Amino acid sequence: MAKIQMKTPLVEMDGDEMTRVIWAQIKEKLILPFVDLKTEYYDLGLPHRDETNDQVTLDAAEANRRLGVAVKCATITPNKARVSEYNLHEMWKSPNGTIRAVLDGTVFRAPIQVAGIRPVVRTWEQPIVIARHAYGDVYKNTELAVPGPGKAELVFTGADGVETRALIHNFKGPGVVQGVHNLDSSIRSFARSCFTYALSEGKDLWFSDKDTISKTYDGRFRDIFQEVYEQEYRAAFEEAGLTYFFTLIDDAVARVIRSKGGFIWACKNYDGDVMSDMLATAFGSLAMMTSVLVSPEGKYEYEAAHGTVTRHYYRYLKGEETSTNPTATIFAWSGALRKRGELDELPELVNFADTLEQATLAVIEGGVMTKDLALLWEGEADVTNTSDFLDTIADELRDQLGGDPGAEEPEDEPELITLVDDEGEEIEMEVLFRTEIDEEEYALLYNEERELELVLRYVWNEDGSEYSLEEADDDEVVDRVLDEYEQALEDLGEADEDDGEELT
Ligand code: NAP
Ligand code: MG
Image 1: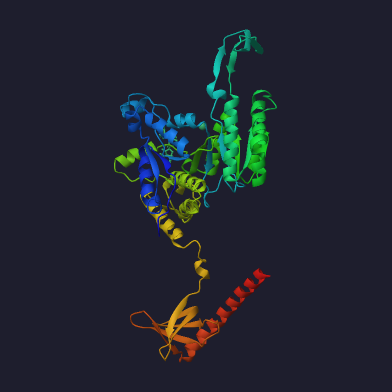
Image 2 (image 1 turned 90 degrees about the vertical axis):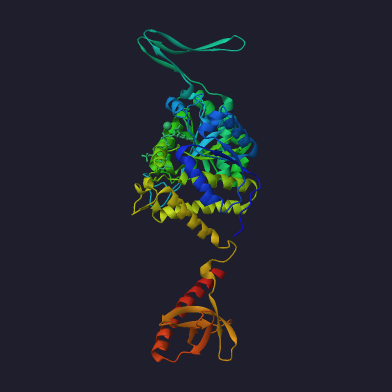
């Protein structure tokens, strides 16, 4: 099998700890044997970020802008403990935050569903993708504790010095007050990312907020979404048979629970924070949650939603066996390769990405899985370590890719054998069925015109290479084979009838 060729390189962002270990194994076992992988490699592992004063993160984000599609390994966001553990020059910012700031994107999180691990909500048949706005609101708030009686006001001073005031509350006693904001430009980017992603995934888009109560603030979100939809996306949505749907957040929650899934749910920052954790838990596990950053210009960065799985890494360093789940990281790779394939019009690459995902799911659904999944699995699971799990997926992937995609299904292909008759003539025949009797085999065979030959006995030559042909002589054996023959004819008759029905 020839390796699948790529046109444009992926931006590959390597990371830290256990996920870095898994990253290398996924490439070695699941990608490199099948794909002539082209990547522009950026090492976002913490030591290299520190060596480059975090320049490598900016370079990687710029490469993502330039090349369009990136795949990212989980990375450490340093805190105080990490500064001393890695002897860092500085407490570097979250790489995800840096990349998001460059691309100005929205993060979409989607659960990977497998048969045998049922969502807590029984009606959910397809994933629900959460799109969380990642700017402003309560995450950039200003708060005050109100000590006692007094007046709280909102004051906006324009660049021209003109003041606008609004009363928040006349306090009669102590309380609290908070100011939050958002930007039209950020909301518009958020809306564009959502519409772009919905089109790229072929899914309906829901957006919800509370504009009945927050008429100006949440109302602005609703208006911008509607405006962007009408002006930029309505035609494409209608052509794709997709809907954009606004509803109040409380109504949305009720509808989500009753739904079958299969749509994208765009939420404001706080709603998205809460709802994504609820959905992740209800669908199963963080290790089965994918994440993709989509910029308003349609640049994509794929990753797993979980972190670097530090606890497993420390065990790995001690030489202990780990059963870390690589599924979400595999799906980050398949997501990026599929998108690259779509953009570069490489159907083989798209097919490879699909098959990689199917093979991964087939292995899990076949009962082979990591420890975290075994806890959720309904049947008896065969728990493996990460490396064996990846080997099993590689075998399955090889099997699934083995057949020529253009060829007929194997079961539809007739089995042919070449027999040599008394005069030494070769005859090619279709095997209808086989029955084994001692070392000899009796089979009913059709010739090329699909006319029935006699019940024949054929015997392997000693080297197994050819058959010789003899008429059956044992009555008992002939009777038995004839019975089986009748059954086979009946089955065949049924199959032919089915074919006939399909034709009319
Ligand atoms: P984490 O790496 O997601 O792991 C938390 C726990 O969840 C693990 O200890 C493990 O539980 C379970 N888990 C997560 N992923 C798993 C997997 N693939 N297979 C099996 N179990 C899995 O979160 P964390 O420990 O809070 O954070 C570790 C580091 O990751 C931090 O330095 C943080 O900054 C970073 N982080 C990075 C990203 C990112 O790059 N996108 C996101 C989040 C966190 P058990 O130990 O019980 O088995
Ligand atoms: Mg949260």
